[in-house]
Image 1 (cartoon, rainbow, N blue to C red):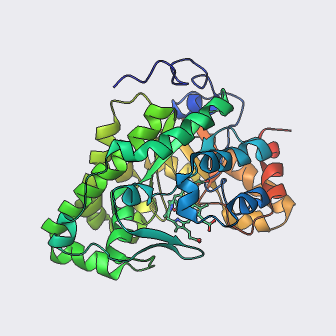
Image 2: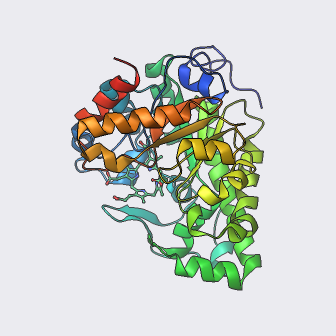
Length: 351
Ligand code: CP3
């Protein structure tokens, strides 16, 4: 589908940005950087705008979501904005009773575990996404040539919240449903794939210049399980979005053993977590795809000298890939000193 004529990639506003070029495999001497969870709790201005507003409400108030998206761009001078929202927003907008408990994560009153639960789910209506597209229009008008990155949760990660009902490190209910009722499993994941895909498409059509699919918990599966139970649904998301002329980043944690399978669902850029050095990831992927990552978030609270050495090492290893967008290996920890982030961005930019 062609993008609207006023989309920043079409007006060329963001088309020549360093992040989009690097995502397209074009390497320049400039080193572009943005950070996962840059829009969030490490910033005092975020905590102040969020006072008295629940997490999901803040995502659904266009002025608030737009302002939070822009805060880290102004402060840190990063090269891209990530849209402030959450992977569970499309579930909520499709009528699922999900909330985000502070310090815990997504919780559901009625997890989806039976055929009847699945039949009660509605399709996500594009009209319900109006608060999202309104926020994006405000953001891209402010960003000018800086690209906005849209995102969604991959079906496996999103379904694990839907089925489990609360965050879990071992996903017992999810794994047992997957093994014991594969037909129901695949039907639930198909619904999730359609829902997350609708959410991402709306962000791109409204002005996002790239998309990132987060499969944060994919690394909890064995390679065989990933290929059988998760990858086909991630593939259906990526395929359904492949008519949009935007880069497609795919990211998961502890996924060093499944990088090629994750690429093969239709990614055009691979996000790498801190467990796999970029030179190793590049070797696994055959040197064929731009990489994003993977500064260790834990180093942000260590000494500045060691952080600089670590960032230089990430840049060095990333220089072997076709192109490289600097990022963290996972999100910014909430207790990070924002001045360290600003300084790190300046260091990467060679200032
Ligand atoms: O800067 C950004 O990255 C912007 C937006 C963003 C958020 N969540 C905001 C948020 C993005 C891209 C996400 C994605 C997301 N949400 C993922 C995938 C990325 C990852 O971290 O692996 C996942 C798994 C979720 C689900 C979720 N939402 C969790 C596990 C939590 C943490 C719960 C907590 O309080 O510790 C959230 C809440 C959340 N999403 C916050 C933010 C800024 C914190 C909310 C707060 O201020 O209390």
